[in-house]
Amino acid sequence: MDTNSPEAAVPQDESAAPHIVKPEPMTVEATIRDHVKTVAAQASAKAKDTAAQGLNTAGEMLENVAATVADSAATIEERFGKPYGDYARKAADTVSGAAANVRGRDIDVAGVAAAVGFALTRLFRIGGDDERDG
Image 1 (tube, rainbow, N blue to C red):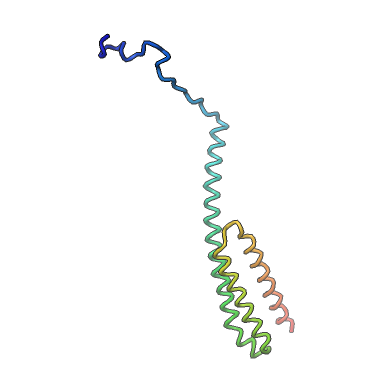
Image 2: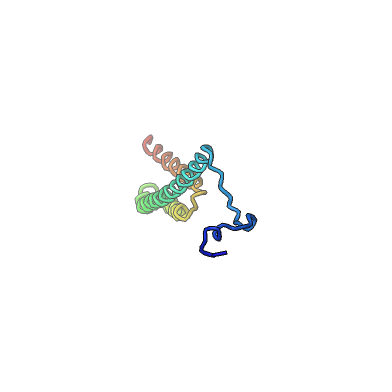
């Protein structure tokens, strides 16, 4: 048989022909499911990125609070006494440590940082209310 003839391109034995599996067409539900998975993955990545930026910002804010309290410690000591000045310095150190922890945290533990921030806010709010009442 001539190798250039059209018959040479067609295998004589069908079992020798490569078996081609045609993929089944995707259903509408499968297409939508795949699209939803893709969008969900993108949204999750964006949310984690945004949360990471938020943690860095929160860490910076806590560090600013710590610096303000530390700067005020001398004034607090003058007005209220040494124990209160020492307490302010200790609080500033604690908040500064919390700031470092917030910046170094994984996104999955961000809830803990939020709880600490809430507790600190309540602590300072209670202290501020006492001063205004007196």
